[in-house]
Amino acid sequence: MQTATLFDLPDIQTLQEAPAAAAPAKPKPKRTSRVHASVPLEPSTTVPDEMIRDADWVVISSSGGKDSQAMLSYVVRRAKALGMLHKVVVVHADLGRVEWEGTRELAELQAALAGVPRFEVVQAKGADLLDRVEIRYGKLKTKAEEEARERGEDPAAVKVPPAWPSSSARWCTPDAKRGPIRTLYTRLVAELAHLVLGRPVRILECIGQRAAESTQRAQLAEVEINRGASNGKRTVTTWRPIHAWSDRTVWREIARSRLPYHPAYDWSNRRLSCVFCVLGCNNDLVNGARRVPELAAAYARMEVTVGADFKKGLSMREIIRRAEALEAAEGPAARPPAGTAMAEHVGRAMTSKYRARHAALYGLAA
Image (cartoon, rainbow, N blue to C red; front, side):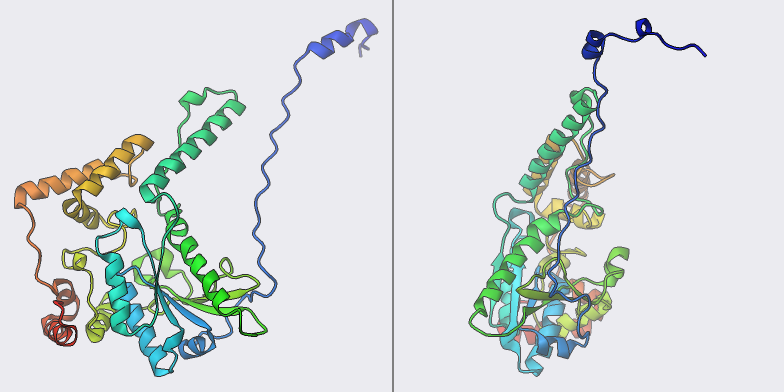
């Protein structure tokens, strides 16, 4: 074995001039959210009437859509029977230009007609959904370029991840709905500050999610503690009152309640809230492009800005093309008769009774 001599070793100057080996990048520490020790792991009860009795506030989230209003009718009916309607608050997260016209007003009307004493509107501060897509794109682009430089690659050649919301990245919901609604929870807690409860304020949040909507929603619990929204001052229990309901059951409750529903359903929409929801079916998206073409055009322009299609495998440009093809073939669609959507699920007889009783009670066209 040959032994290295002093002359075989590099001198000190050579060592100093040699480039140092690149130190491996340290992974950024993950942020961990701490839950207050007072927040329970499981709800104390899952019995509807017991949950309403135990709650200090019963907050019903209403998008103005059919599931929200069916849930509203059902929960209010139970609260009235218990003599606890004074606890009920209906909250609508206003999405601005991206939601169907008249949605906020309809949600308020539904709450008033149901007899709910309090209706609240919350809204995300600053940018709306489309603006947030552009802001998100800028952040993603900056991050991708920085990572490329760290790897010694050309930052101009990076591929930026899609900035649009998706089924796997539904950042729009916490930004536009959950976050603003939690500001209401803070206010509701403050309103009870004069009471000496000796415990956190109990908020029962009612959400109109149904198992029939998607595989993901089918896996949600009907009742659970919302540990992310709970803290040392409040315990938030999530209740999904209509989680097991079918479409028919939803429409039967609407017919029974006599509350008005949004006309977009008569236009054949399956969902309501954002005109263009990434989780919406193709029919809803094309329907939206026919009814609100200026908003569809804004989405198409944003696709160009962020370099990605609005929905994976389906661009807004294609949605607009399909809408224009239908307009060319059929002409401007005539508004279907009121009650068309309900009749498809519960029949014409029940729908006729709904419309007649609705007009008699409220003096409004169904």
